[in-house]
Image (cartoon, rainbow, N blue to C red; front, side):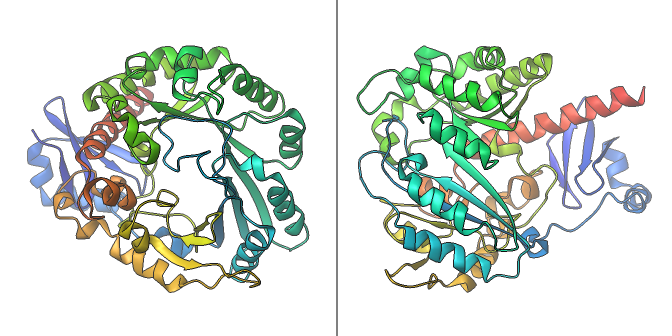
Length: 417
């Protein structure tokens, strides 16, 4: 029995039947092959609100998200860094950051999320503080997020905590894994300082996300990583497999085996459940948000600003990507301008261009509107074309989405008993 797409819903084979999952009413039902062909069953499911229409979700949003990549500089020298952090000492200017915020505030929004990225964004702390102060009295609900490597002094951490920043900290595992993957720029250990930062954040808030990259060195230790992080007080882990981009091209041997990654992610789900933790992967981000578009599903006019004055549609395409960068570019900042001169209409055109319906391989896939054909930038970087899906990521998404649906089914069946 093959997994199928049934009236645009995922329908997965399990125990000689099919589990049909509706993200629209968040219900599941087990059906036989014969029942799937029965028109009266389909009508009953329709009456129960099972069916819906995958839409461009950002159209409904009055939230704008801006990602400020404040510098390419970094105090770590991670083997897999896709922006080659630390190799270029380029820093975003205050004028560029303020122009980006002014541009965002001109949109029809009632909420703005500003996410600081890098390199290591805290190395350009003046720009970060400038943005926080600028948005203080603008009459728009403002939220701040930061992705950091954790090599940050306590004074800066306390400032970010005081301003209610949501932290995403990168930590790859116990000391031997972390220090191998993510040594400092001077080739010394990073684990102890990152853990110190994590503990300082957790002493003030439990809203902490840990980003963990899995390589061939760590793939068979994923459940051990979960247990180790539990001992540090961590409750949320975002796992992703290492896929060579940027500096990672020099370490392509670290790419994990796809079957091992899937197998060990599933094991780590069991361990996380046992310990009361949550783990995720990009594959299962959109389980409750079916959509035809393949990027930026939740936010209106989300864009990325890089420290070298470029404005792009995509965080993953920042430098060294040649013609692929041009696809995702929406403008460039000129010093002295108060706002960004961008082709925001291109965002809407790219939304339509990146529709999963344009991908031949995804035509009848059960996960079509939950996976959306993988990330278009990722596809472009690996296959040369946004509409040709990277097989490695495709397999992971199919396995993990199916596993998530089966687990939801088991949980709902248990609750009904």
